[in-house]
Image (tube, rainbow, N blue to C red; front, side):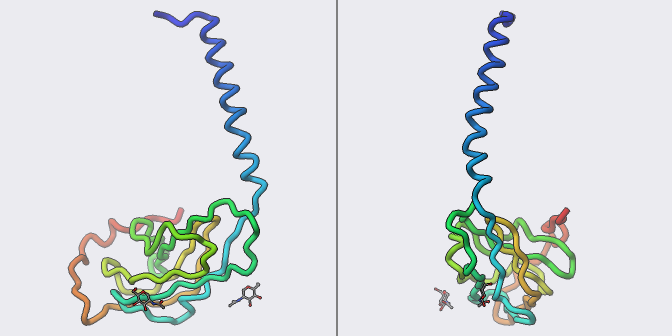
Length: 153
Ligand SMILES: *[C@@H]1O[C@H](CO)[C@@H](O)[C@H](O)[C@H]1NC(C)=O
Ligand SMILES: *[C@@H]1O[C@H](CO)[C@@H](O)[C@H](O)[C@H]1NC(C)=O
């Protein structure tokens, strides 16, 4: 059955109304403040052996009362390759207002120079530190290196 003119107009009207209704929460979100807390730890020159527990710390002093996205995510940026390790996050699903997160350094990444990138409300890169191989950690997943990297662009 072909749509009649009136049903087409009705459909278009519904689409317009739906767009207007959708626009309300988006507009109220835009009134909130953007929060990009500075990363304090790992500090410049710090060394993280793979498989060890490490604390990521960031400064929440200037956090606004309402932020657009409180759910934080910690990922690595390789300084050597200039790329983000988006598929190997160190931590996800915590509150960005916590100010710290205790995590285990993944074994399935290359040793090298990194920055911690704190994402949530907006991204923020920390100081450059190193991840090194740990002699007592079993290196089982060291293949397919290049496929694991994503461009920042
Ligand atoms: C956190 O940020 C505030 C405001 O910029 C600053 O005064 C304070 O020294 C910072 N704290 C640390 C531990 O960096
Ligand atoms: C991080 O968590 C591990 C395991 O629960 C614990 O052994 C370690 O002491 C914690 N580190 C800090 C700094 O809280």
